Image (cartoon, rainbow, N blue to C red; front, side, top):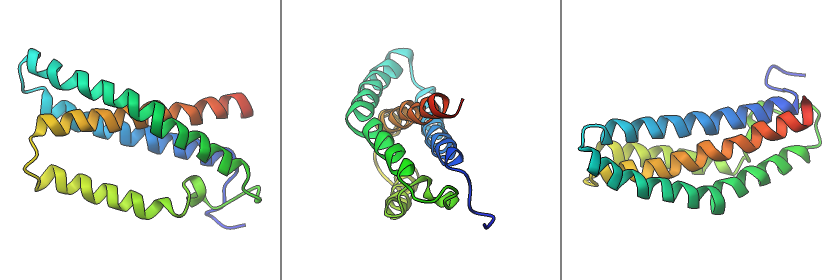
Length: 142
């Protein structure tokens, strides 16, 4: 047993915490970009972001979270590597998404309110989907 091998329930917790954290970070960026606008303009950008978050949750991240839970369940080891909370092939995608986010925030000519709506969508979808991990943990280990 090595330092990086953990019980499976910690993988579910780690995945949920990561998804929640990223969702909160994205939501914080959106808040910072939108809070300087008028109330009417904030609403005009927030509502599409919330709608997008709903679509991303229902048709994307919730399915991915459930698939990831099943993948962790099927891991043959009782104490897999801590890095197994995500599929190994997902790590390059995660790096790409981080890089794209940095580019969009720093260099892109895309207006910040539009980015705010997109970040609300992605962040809201991630945050909402993270609860699949917590609910699975609660139903299985508590």
